[in-house]
Image 1 (cartoon, one colour):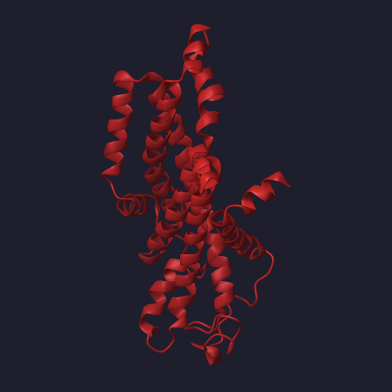
Image 2 (tube, rainbow, N blue to C red; image 1 turned 90 degrees about the horizontal axis):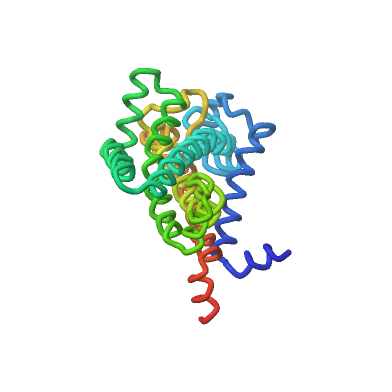
Length: 280
């Protein structure tokens, strides 16, 4: 009840939570039910507008757009979640290690992160796809590698402030090991920052997955993908604009929900923001 009352005080968080829950619910429901058969071709209904052939209309092959969007949400999350979590785990480990060691170790880790930043995620995905094939694993690896330096830098910056605190110095004086301090004292105090960054990177991962699918990296037909739906709809944009609007709005609302959720969590978890909102 206390958590619910706190959420109600943050409309940004509430709105983002609703949109994110709808995204996850659509993805989960698609495992057991969709409004129509997503692979069934209904030539007589091709390019029909919303409500003329199902809730969201039909595509150029007569497939139900609502079903395609739901399964597209599932496939998007199948790529985005493990990719961001894998990148976050490695990045948090590297960032924590760099913050605890400082000196040469810190500089080496940060230079490696700079080198990784020099390679765009799309280029990494193309390279991985050329070697191992352009399936969803290529997209997952590319997004994961892109996120490693992001979380390493965020974790390092937040952790360095905690390492300068007096209670950390006291823990060192008591003989506590660096890793014990990092796990028991530092990470719990920067968890809020990491969670907020996780939401932001998930939103970015959804956009990246759509971009990869647009150029042919990711789930192959007949598995639906929001990015490939946009690509296939280009030819029909003048006569069936819903083919562009439906997957485009799905991407926009998914990204908006995660960004609002991240902003709302920042407002709720940041003590400075709480004091500012209380005064206003």
